[in-house]
Length: 278
Ligand SMILES: [Cu+2]
Image 1 (cartoon, rainbow, N blue to C red):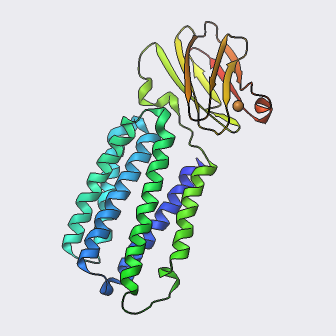
Image 2 (image 1 turned 90 degrees about the vertical axis):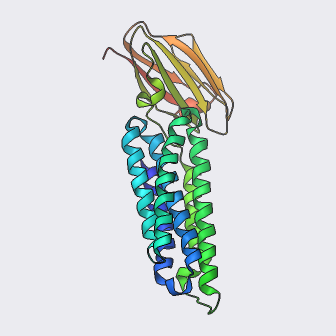
Image 3 (image 1 turned 30 degrees about the vertical axis):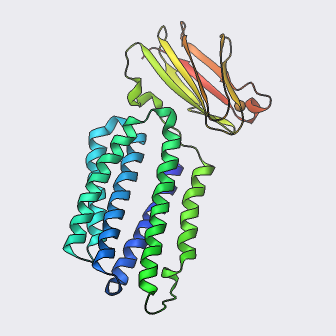
C-alpha cells in the first residue's frame, strides 16, 4: 500500500501548490485564467481520483463514483474561488464530470491493462499540472519579475519528476479475488503479475474441484514463467505479454509455484496456491 500513499501525497502537494498560486497572486490573474485553471484542476482531479479508485476498489463502484464526483467538484470550486462565480461554476461542473468519467474508465478497462492505464493517467495528470503551473507563473511574472521560490519552475518540476519516478520503482498489485471480472460462477480467474523478481499476488486461494483460469501478465523487462510444482501447469510470457491456462485442483492442499528462468526463483519469484473449501 506504500505506492498509493506516496502518489497521493505528491498529488495533493502538486494540486495545493497550484491552488495556492491562485490565492496568493489573484490580483495579477485574469478571470479567463481562472476559468481555465478551475476547469482543468477540477476535471483532472476528478478523472485521476475516479480512475485510481475504480481500479483499486472495483467492488465499491457506486460509492467511489459519488466520492470522485464530490472531490472533483470540490477541487473545482476551491480552485475557482479566488477568481469569480463563473470560474467556480466552471470548476464545479468539470470536476463532477471528470469524477464520473474517471470511475467509468477504471471499470471498463480489463485488469491486465490496469498498469498501463494508471501509467497513462498519471503522466497525463502531472503533465497537465505542469502546464497549468507554467501558465500561472507566466501570468504572475508578466509585469514585475517575482523571484520567490513558489514561482520558480525547478521545485515544482522536481515534484512532477518524483511522481513519475515513483511509478517506475513500484508496480501496483491488485487484489484480484475481489475484482469485477471474477464473478462468473464455477470459474475463478486469477491475474498473476510478474516483474523483477516477484509475483503479485504471491499467495492465492482457490476452491477444490473448480476450474481456475490463471493469467500470467509480464509487467517486467525480462521473460518470466509460472510453473506449479507437481502439476503439468506451465505459463510463459515475454515482457509486455500475457498467457492464460485453466486448471482444476482436485485435492485441498498447498501448492508451490515458481518462475523457472535461472536465478528467478532464488531472487523471490515464488507463489503459494492454497486449495481449500470456503
Ligand atoms: Cu522470472
